[in-house]
Image (cartoon, rainbow over all chains, first blue to last red; front, side):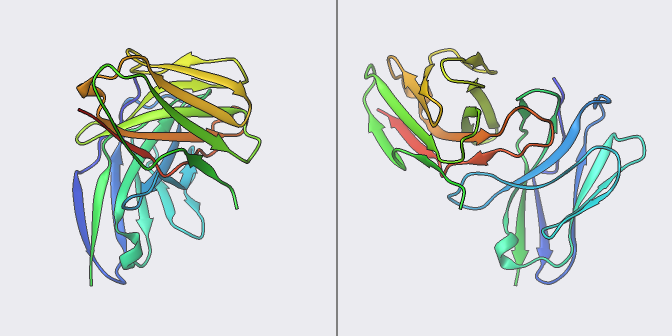
Length: 109
Length: 114
């Protein structure tokens, strides 16, 4: 199984950048790196994904290490609404995601 | 606005009861998924379906079955509920298989089996 490792929890001050790390040392060449987040009392929602190159969208940036064994989700300015559990997921061809336990992000006002 | 809805937010059942969890999506997606979420274990895939009447086992299918008679609806069935099936159940859908296709999740059903 393609597994990911994330810290259980992290804290950030409001309006500061947040870097959420993820290790995926067993990643294979066809695995895409996806990030989802789960706000309290909601289902997970898509944040961003990438394969080899760094990616930016309106929600976040994804920095992928050159050897692809790790990645970092970057929230440029944390807000209170960004408090959530963030999941780093490897997705191979096909339908299956491998969710881990995620990182619980606390944003401090 | 894309929508995945689940029949109940909270459900309480007794041991041995047959339980149906319903999921409906309005995005015409081919793929649908059932996960359960437990503290310390994250989300684990129970079953998924890539077409009407098609189903595939996920990581933890034991004690569950599924039904997909219509494209928009995917049901999870607990034939004889047990206390270790107390959990949060999440349904998701996505377009045709592609590694970049995002999954859209419903709000979840918190099932308690007494």
